[in-house]
Image 1 (cartoon, rainbow, N blue to C red):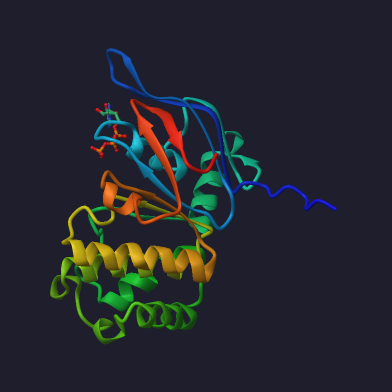
Image 2 (image 1 turned 120 degrees about the vertical axis):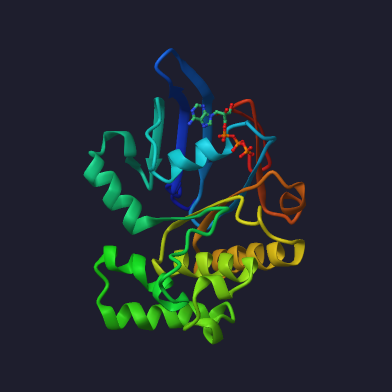
Length: 233
Ligand SMILES: Nc1ncnc2c1ncn2[C@@H]1O[C@H](COP(=O)(O)OP(=O)(O)OP(=O)(O)O)[C@@H](O)[C@H]1O
């Protein structure tokens, strides 16, 4: 007996995206077809300007595709209202950016707990989860510090911990190592791999560094807004 087919967590078909200025529209994604199965770890590589960040913003539900379809766990995202998309993003998707986007006047633990408010997680549970994820990354000792008192690598790990605390199904990381030294960057990529392997979170890591692509797993390569190589197909 063959196993039933698994619904991809992410399924893109003929997806395009155009930036519109007052004068004209510039298409920067041209017919992207990609499926990502639940539990996959995908590294997206490509030179500067190839469309990696644009793709990530569409996947994160921050921008709507111009044409084509994006299905998230079988749901056609294009058919959702803005409110429904925002709810799906809040519940199921987390993003780690190159800039850490931590709130300076909140402690590390408060930063990690803060987004859980929007998922309506009760206060005691927010505190418990923040402590748990910080401990996993060895940052429990920094829980009461402020972001400015941490190194860049530690701040980015707090960003990963914050993403994990929300228990996302899809974690998108856009050049999370871009501002870091090699060793710090390695710790951040290790953290992404761990939450993929241990927690089953589907991860899509965008980078223009070949170094991380060489670390294994599936690699999707973009060039001029098109997928030119995909080791998963
Ligand atoms: N807000 C915008 N308005 C118009 N064009 C844009 C905008 N943002 C990006 N672009 C264009 O879209 C194309 C793809 O950009 P994108 O940032 O997605 O590439 P990238 O592969 O992530 O590059 P990098 O590795 O440098 O971050 C580029 O030609 C860029 O100039």
